[in-house]
Image (cartoon, rainbow, N blue to C red; front, side, top):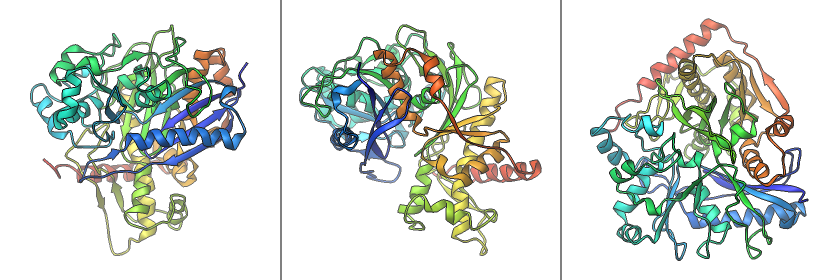
Length: 503
């Protein structure tokens, strides 16, 4: 029996390949960043060919570093930055345009026209989503409307549409030579094109957006015993390995955290910040600005759903402090800089760089720094940058408690920012609940590995995955309740200052 599972994590800022053993421990990994392309304010792009090249390099790098052969892998899973969208030629694999990133606000006019005819919740009863620049469907429409060659190819059935897991799976399983064109339910559910109940493309919405369904991928379970195809012996693994697991990055973290029961929740602190609450086998409509979305689907089982609060800018705000302002040399420095002061001296940073997502859904918002005085310095600004993520998370939890009718009692956390202990303590203080970090913090990639491992029989079932989860550290609240509420009230005032900056 093969000894390991491999998982590709195609993220917003980098691509990784991690190899796991049966206990869910990392035995090999490699990572490579890709360019962030900003053609104009509010626009964000990636080069999909660069990402595919990097994916091949990190697969080969992880194998080389660990001394493991591709043939020793039981299967490969994929997790990905959701909503980021690419349209390409099925015959050559050449993209018609750069990948439009989930953060990109260029589809604002498309979304405004959609809302003019039916409001922001026009498709929410079918898709669980508001009309927003966040989702993939308007991005596909923008490419087809803007690039004549793409529209012509789509009309002839020669253009393929997909999010990044679709792009990577297509190449891993053969590309132009018969690659599988599939998307799992969690990614399909983020397009604004899939019916939450039937798990099929909604023909009426596709027609409204003028998107030919023939270019859309086949919707499949997140963990699929009917594998989508093997990798090629000429490919980066150098062996035929089944590709049979795919989960959008935030749902993958839910799986990696073993949140398999209704009421269990996790928050991932990455480029953005995403809190998901498992709600069971029936979708729960949100009345408070959250998304109703797929949690995952294992082959042969009913789909599981969740409520999600999506925050566009979390770790990316630390990157902004580093790359745009030059206040730190690397992301880890922000904690030591912030620790030099005990509070922000009244400074708040609201990172609405391309609008606000949940629970506000304000594409007209733009970032602000409020409360500045001559007393404020770089230490206060660094602390305000960290606290912004915790405040945004509380916004989500407040909405989630109202939608679910159950107050959050603890929060499992993961992602790159959970190494920041100052942030984790402030998060616990702001939510007034324990915050718990697992031993394996790379839960996103682990979730993709679990999806592939369950499909291939490497793991027997969810109970085995639960047993792999081990607590690493727990933070408990230690803030005066009056101070907590006073700080949060000021945050909400700062959020209001972001509204109305663009039409």
